[in-house]
Amino acid sequence: MPPVIDPRICKVCGKCADICPEDVFFGSEKKQVPVVSYPDDCWHCNSCVYECPVEGAIKLRIPLPMHVVYKPGTK
Ligand code: SF4
Ligand code: SF4
Image (cartoon, rainbow, N blue to C red; front, side, top):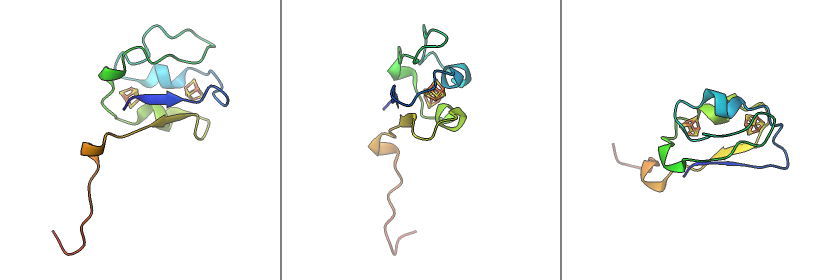
């Protein structure tokens, strides 16, 4: 899943859009909440989340198939 920005706490700094190596936030305006224009281009690198100065302002939902499932007793 692409990133989701909470507009209530986003400080509109634009760092997430600047750091993204893809065109996910293409067309976002400076000093406005970034828009997720191309969600399918997101490859879940997490850079936008790490770069964001506000805890919880941007969240990434990792697709279920990408989760590593821990099973006790298996290698
Ligand atoms: S997780 Fe990576 S590719 Fe996806 S929007 Fe954030 S910076 Fe861009
Ligand atoms: S980095 Fe965080 S605070 Fe800055 S524009 Fe993106 S979501 Fe908003």
